[in-house]
Length: 260
Image (cartoon, rainbow, N blue to C red; front, side):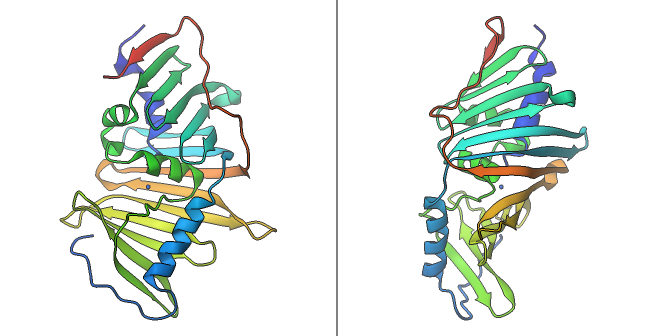
């Protein structure tokens, strides 16, 4: 088996999409919705999250990569997620399984399995190393995570303007959100550090079905410092029960590498 240097393509393809404000302004509420109502609506959406499966295409544009591939993803709410990536003629390039405690990925191109804690695996990829697990899962499901403990530091709404709000993170960074009242979804999140530099941004686009429900149509992730853009285009989305436990399979002779 060759060195890890030759096996980084799969984690890049599988993980780079997992990705989702200087001095915070004072709270401004122009009319209609209140901060408490906004919080209630967002938590209501999070609580209603169901098991999820989807397929589509993933495109990564970066200085060292400009590639597209097919993908399938299954998620059990926000607890675990499995993704498979396909190359030409539907050949499986690899698959990955995330849980809150473990990451496992199988690279079919070199018959290698990677295992380790999710945060340790992410630290191997600098442009996603600061993205929390909840954001990875939420981005794939097309629903940006919103923590109940989040402190809404500013809130703006009013006639003719898109509701937006800012959350202060424990590390001093700020998340600026845009919210769509029709879909009851966050449609954009931009994270800036204390010096107003954009660390990453994620945009969500939704499609309304005939029954009035909304499903993700596209997720776009941008990491300016890495000149990287990732697009997830969804061709099919299903909500409902999936298999009791998400697993990935690989040959008995696969090389296993533990990420310390």
